[in-house]
Image 1 (cartoon, rainbow, N blue to C red):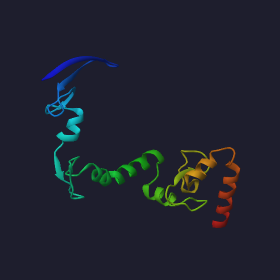
Image 2: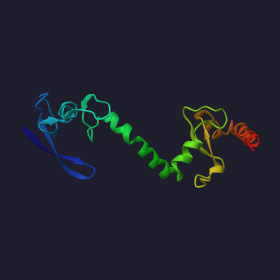
Image 3: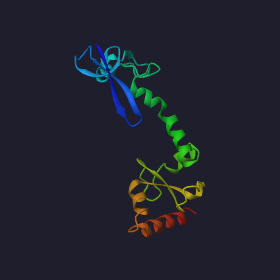
Image 4: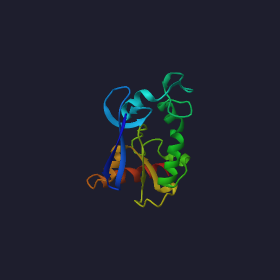
Length: 158
């Protein structure tokens, strides 16, 4: 049994369907197949053997479970975001952010523009910094110290 309820939203009135869920028996917002949102997401999604990991899990898309789907397309999404936000090639981004320019830390490395101009994406203007050094360079307290380290390292590297 479903109920139509009119609810006021920011964009006007909208019909919201409520039902007595087939699984939990509670009156909740209707999703599909007689289930509420909660039960449909937990129990209404068909389970399949994932093409990538081979485990029986709820299907997300293309015969993959949610985790394998994200892993499959994460590199494409990351490459798209690098091009969109930094306007550089993903290869250059990976090369620059391979390790911190100052300390060599390589687990998490952020991109920093040396001249502070985010539109200047020349390879000579970009360096990779670990989160600590990146935070320090943007802090007035440690800015001179970090810039000195960068300049000294650039002189050594030529």
